[in-house]
Length: 84
Image (cartoon, rainbow, N blue to C red; front, side):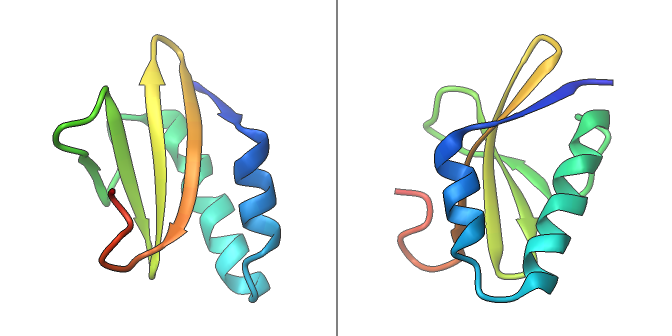
């Protein structure tokens, strides 16, 4: 099992999400990352330095994985500029 670490900016981004249902879904999906790489809806972000994305409804959770720690880098609404 891997340890999940949240950056402060991510916690602020989560507070700005309008619906509690979306926030709860994101927390639940991120909790399942402890079993990484045996998770669904995860893809490697091409041309990045070991970043992955987790799809949760219309939201994307950007994270990195090093040894036994998963660091949540960003939470963004899916649009044409999400991965830039």
